[in-house]
Structures are given as structure tokens and as C-alpha cells.
Length: 461
Image (cartoon, rainbow, N blue to C red; front, side, top):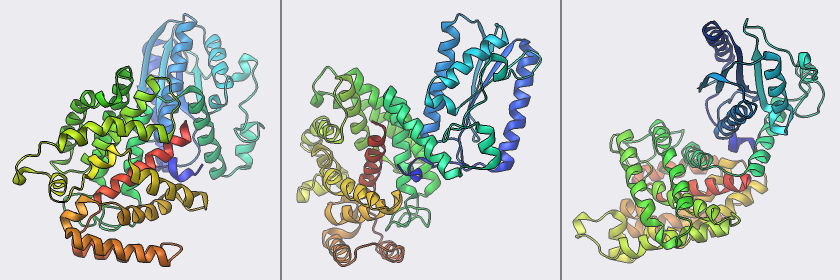
């Protein structure tokens, strides 16, 4: 497990953390002044500068639900509850009409009841604002997540590095998710994370990345970030769609998913001012998410092979129907024109094949390079080049023509054959050439995002 997969997001500065603590204390005072009852404040213990990520969001929500369930199970009256998201971490508040010492005992049981509870920081305050100590309940001080010694001793002596703490933190969260199972909301977050990883992979030839906007004048990293955030919930709904319709044939599910996908496209265009940032991924990742729901709804084991096969079954009608009755040539999309002229089926064909380019090329290369010690993004850059060489990217054909694209593929293939590694200098030069030719392998970039998603998914199942 590599930290660079999960530790992505806003990096919190010390000043922001200190300001957050002051705001939290102020919020606690406001609530206590209003209710004069026992107050619970729930946050997370997350090492490193990134406090909010796909995994920590899931951890917080599961902890929030666990606390609420514990309070209601014990019949403790909840007078007030609040969930507050912040860049420096999520906060949960409850006002409980019960003895503060009893509530602290109950919260300490949650903290000590599982490995993931070590990442929970559940403060209980007396009505006067003073914290109830764990020692008041007869429990020992918190233990270190790595070595089990008193956490305060390890922290004061700095016995463990931030990297070690991050590695352990993510491992504990992942193990918890594997034990408790995947939630549709988490799968939606993984889709958004995969889209962010794709745009953050730098440098990439002709594509938007952290260096430049590639061959695009109408989009940049911030627009991709906005678009990914906008469509995240669609992927959650796609999983739920697959769950809801798991009793019917996979080939019949696409008609149920299609209205959700159309709405997601409209939401994307509204957020981006009409720019097509993620239309291809709305189609392809949406089908994959729906396939996840279909598999889980049938209580089948979720594997990459089964998932991609099921995705192909769901996508098959799109290839059979969408490319059967084509509109007049002038109204065709680029993909429809390539199919009409050359029989290239584009993303519909890729999806209907069960994403064979991902299964046979992109994902194996990504995972092999990571096994060899490459970082997530470095492995992704090489996987992208192999996809460009082997995939009929309709976006490239539209911009460069079939012969022009074939020349590009041959040149990259020759380089991959002659070099054991791909240097950053080579990628920068390739990016320059792509920009000069106005070339952009957008279809292959989508396939890379799918590779990223599937790799993360396999970490959690």
C-alpha cells in the first residue's frame, strides 16, 4: 500500500490547524451556553498535513454513525447534533441529556473497541465546559497506534515518523473497510479520487496536468477538480442503481442507469460552462459502478475480472443500439463518425468488451510497475503511453487523422521498445510535440482513470 494513492487533498498548515482549534473551542462554548448539558465533540486523529481524504471522510462518517447508534441504543436523549466539514478535518457534535461520566464511559468503549477506534478522538465535556478524563472512568490513557505504548510518550519523544503514522493510519482504515464492506458513497469518492489522480499525473502528452493545459484552451486543473466534485454523487447513485436492479439481467440494467447518466452530463456541463471534462468517464465509470452494485446485490464476490465482465454485459446494449441507427453525418459525434467510416466503436466498444484495454494493457502495466517500486503516478504515466500505442483513441483520430495518429503510435512504441524506463524529459518533449500537433489522447486518459479506480478498489475489497 502506497501513501501517495490515498494522501491526496488539501495540505493543512500549522496556522490553519491552530485556527481550527480556536473555532472548535468557540463552537463548543456556544453549544454549551445554549443547552447546559453533556457535550460530545468527535474528530479524527490523522497524522500528516492532509486531514480530509476519501478514506478519512469514510472513517468519520462510520464513526459518526457508530456514536449516534450507541447513544440511541442506550436510550440517551439527544437534544442536538451537528456534523461540520472543514478543510482541517470533520467535526461532530451531540448534546446529550445524561450524566457526563456515563457518556464518557460509553465513548471510551467505542475508542477502545476496535483498531479503527484508535483514530477516533471523542471528547466529552461537562456542562461547565471541562473535559471528562478517561482516567475518571477507570481507563488508561490512549495507546500508540504503532507500538501500543502510551501515545503521549511516543508523541513527546517523536518515536515514530509522520510517514510511519500515515502508513499505519491508512492500513487500519483499509482493514476496517474490508471487514465492514464497501458503501456506495465510498465508491463514488473513489471515482472522484481516480479522476483527480488522472489530472494530477504529470507530465502527460497533450493533456491537462499540473504543468500546463496540454492541447486544450478551454480547460485546466481547477475545472477538472470542479467537474469531478460535481459528478461524484452520480457514481454513488450508479452503484445504488445496480443494487436496486440486481434481480434483473445485466443487459437490461443500462436502461435504468441511462437517465442518471444524462442528468450527470447536464450537471457537468452546467458546472463547467459547457466544457466536456468528464463525459467519457460518466459513461464508462458509471457502467462500472453500476456493475459493482449489480454484483454486490447478488451477493457475489467482487473481483476485477467479474466486475469488468459484468460491465461489458451492462454496456453491450449501448454498442448494439447507439451505433445501429446513426444520425445524419453532420450530426454525428466524433465516435459515431469513426464507427461509420472505419468501424471503430470507441468507448462503447471498449465498454462492451469488458474494457479489454484496461484488463490486458493498462492495469497489468500499472500494477507491475508499482510492484517494482514505481510511484502511483509514475507507473500511471507509463501505462498511459502503452494505452496510446494500443488503443484507437477517437479523440486522437479526430485531431490528427488516422495516419497521423498511427505515426505517433509507432514513434512511442519504438521508444517503449528501446528504453526500459520513461524519463520525465522524454514526457515533457512528447507533451510539447502533442501540443504543437493539437493532439490529445482524451480517451486513453479516461482509461487511465479507470485503471487508477480499479487499483484502489482492489485495495479495499
